[in-house]
Amino acid sequence: MKTLQIGNLTAQLPIVQGGMGVGISLSGLASAVAKEGGIGVISAAGLGLLYKKLSSNYTEAGNLGLKEEIRKAREKARGIIGVNIMVALSDFAELVKTSISEKVDIIFSGAGLPLDLPSFLRKDSVTKLVPIVSSARAAKLICEKWKNNYDYLPDAVVLEGPKAGGHLGYKENQLEDEHYSLEQLLPQVVEEVSHFEEKYDKKIPVIAAGGIYTGEDIYRVMELGASGVQLGTRFVTTYECDASEAFKKTYIEAKEEDIEIIKSPVGMPGRAIHCNFLQKVKDGLKQPKVCPFKCIKTCDISKSPYCIVTALYNAFKGNLENGYAFAGSNAFRASRITSVKETISDLVKEFRDREFFTRSSSK
Image 1 (cartoon, rainbow, N blue to C red):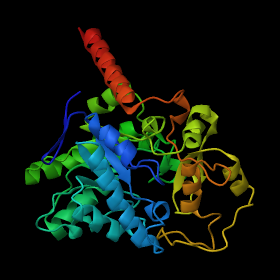
Image 2 (spheres, rainbow, N blue to C red; image 1 turned 120 degrees about the vertical axis):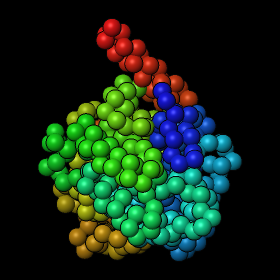
Image 3 (tube, one colour; image 1 turned 120 degrees about the horizontal axis):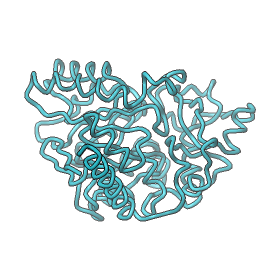
Image 4 (cartoon, one colour; image 1 turned 90 degrees about the vertical axis):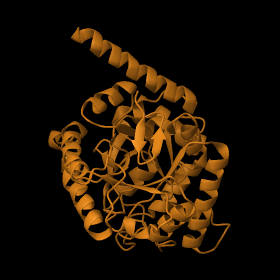
């Protein structure tokens, strides 16, 4: 495997661990991945709930919690640490400012178009900015807006395909449409980004995400032009993942038919593992009385069947009767808990085996 260069940062392996909230990827998982030469990512979603003891104000607690997680990750490992901040979060701006002031290496931002992300940078900022997109059109729009408004181009771009876990940047009827597959979209995004690379003489690596689970998958998308990959689901079933054992167990026990598309209160389709909680939602038995946090800009309490941050927090803690696990399309393939070191070693071996087989076959 080649290295992944993002600005002046060099990851020894082209592997980005996807940011997973609420609480699934915190300093524990992020530092373990960074220690092995990948890019570890802390999810900023719901930290106001995880760190509610620090402040009664949800936004303030979230910012204090984010500082704490970045500090913990830095103490545990030397390496590249990023933060994933969803545009849809009500405290998006505060979390971005905190990440930049704490000099986190990279901000990954999706679940909406982060059109004003460069506006938060200061002259002494070192943080790299990486938008997460679902199309070449979105990549072009962000590049144009950032360049025109802030004289800044993305330091990399993540293309997240429709097989990802969690919230998806696609309409439900596009999820199984081959025209929207990662394999179809990746060359389009690589080509679109290349125009900006050539025009402004700046390298903008494209990182492929969504449904990537094995080293063979990594080899395949890198042959299509990706400079790196982002994996989330594969890292959930590791000892270092910050989720509860019960959460990890849902992955190991899941069958392929348990992976389903749900309608999220956020207003996007999402991919999750079926459970009693989600069945009750389908049956119309769930309805929140109040909105305790106002954590998502697009969430309407009068129309939402449940409070999403509470449901995800419950799942993170292991209370699957009152929550559910987001998961990628390959979550059912997990069979046991392993270490991050072993997981990455397996990915590298799978990649090399595929590379050797391909080269041998072409002779």
